[in-house]
Image (tube, rainbow, N blue to C red; front, side, top):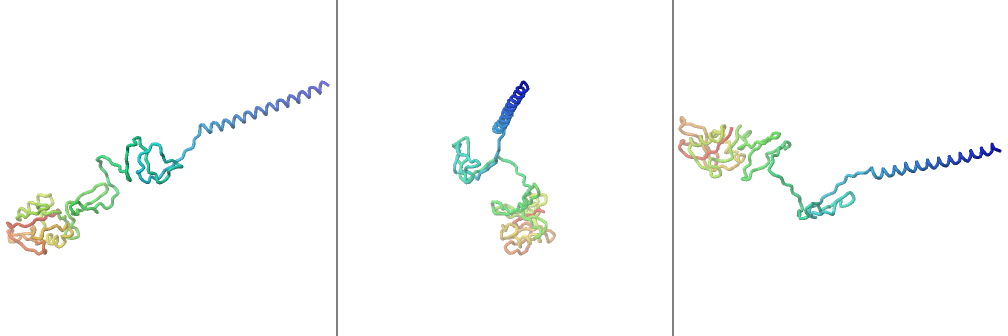
Length: 240
């Protein structure tokens, strides 16, 4: 009898402990799942990258309307500013103070003209730009440059031969009065050298009659001639 009672008590005890274990396990699982959800929601965030198309700036400054990943993706006309008095037109212009710019990519830097209509050759090499004061006669008349203006500049003036020679020498260390051959070629190809010559005689550096006379070229028809050095004619110099 006593043996039967002990057996029943043992079964009841085992059943009670099994139920308690199940409750403990259930609570632990609940806490684990709940904690995972809690920490995931509070300590992990997802990010996104987005952009929008600015159509114009005509909408003006607006501190409340914004473009985001779901709204105002295209044709956006507003811009954000701390100062709502900012006014912008259809285009936005950025300006900066004086600065130096180094050009290392331009292949051809000689396509432009200056403001007086005279084209001057420009050479470009890596980050250096050089302005050549004259028209390159290479392949046309010889290895020299024709200077862009006569003596006197935009109002050409005449001079005797000695003054013409000293004038060209004073312009640069390699500047000269052209020879008769060079001057004749310059006349025949004047369209390549600015085409701004006077239609009259120009002095050349070529002398004759024991140095008492010098050759000239009429730029009206490229005819050659000569005269005594005291005579006055127009002067166009070259740079070698």
